[in-house]
Length: 431
Image 1 (cartoon, helix red, strand yellow):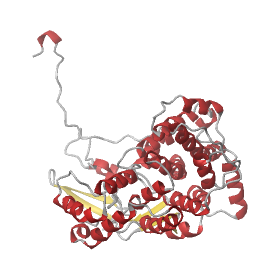
Image 2: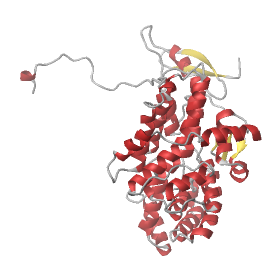
Image 3: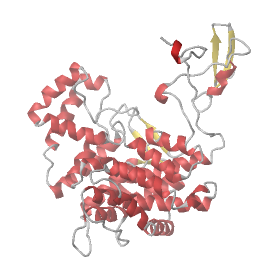
Image 4: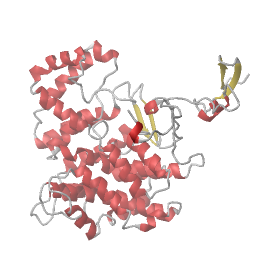
């Protein structure tokens, strides 16, 4: 008997089936042969939220949550955060290898020179209410770009895909900057091609009356590291949305808009905002023990935000890097008053058996919000700051999906639990 198989005995019929195992998984369609009768559809697997179902094969991001490993194309996240830049990491994620100097120069030039928006997009953003959420504006504006670049529908043309990749990665910070300035009633600050990717984003966010904006190098580097850490994270909710919507062969702008909409949710891109609100709710370091006590009592009224992760059952490797970045930022901006609460919360949680047994360790959201707040960004901008770097990961996942011969339009099965066949009753006879 082949050892790389799974033998299943169907106790309903007494029949045995041998299912091949490949790469640690079985093909769900192999279960269809397990039937009780000829007209039986066949056995399905039921897996709400894809807790244990692989929807694709990918070469982009590797995660081992049990020991806290995250790698892009095989490169440890720690090395990329220390030695790389966001644009170089984006190239790696998209094309599979680190670029040569010539490749990086060309890549950076192409991204830089696609950062300007069509003036009608600016008018589109002007049409939003003064207090519209920046993320809602971003989602809408990205989708609107599909009407400006109709060549984007040629999704199986490699040249067209490359052009849309340049446009999306270049224009996301500009859309974000314009959305932010609109939300605070300030005039738009246009891209400056002399600045780095993150330096230019800071320029579009914070430039006032100066002729030339000069970003603080510590803040610029910190933002670059945060962008690297958020560039991709395997098959999360927004990436699944990108692949699912993209599987219909829609243009990449609409697919990115769908992914960004998924990121908008508080359980995904809004998690670091939830951490800040939790810290503000606690109020002071001396109130942390009482807060921990309420969490452990578990009535659902008090939740510990920024700890634990669907994937990581160890310390999120991104959280360790961000903690160091936070120290660098606070040295420039001053110490965030919420930091002492966060450190005390982390200290107690990491020493408490209740959290250790449940493998609740700090995740990427625990410190990132403190950094964003310290450099002057409103909490409404936090999911936007997530969407900018994640765009490179979304596009890489979308293109991988398009070129995978096994992929088809996403269409999950369901287990029907509704009523059986019923006859229509005229309204006058209904009780």
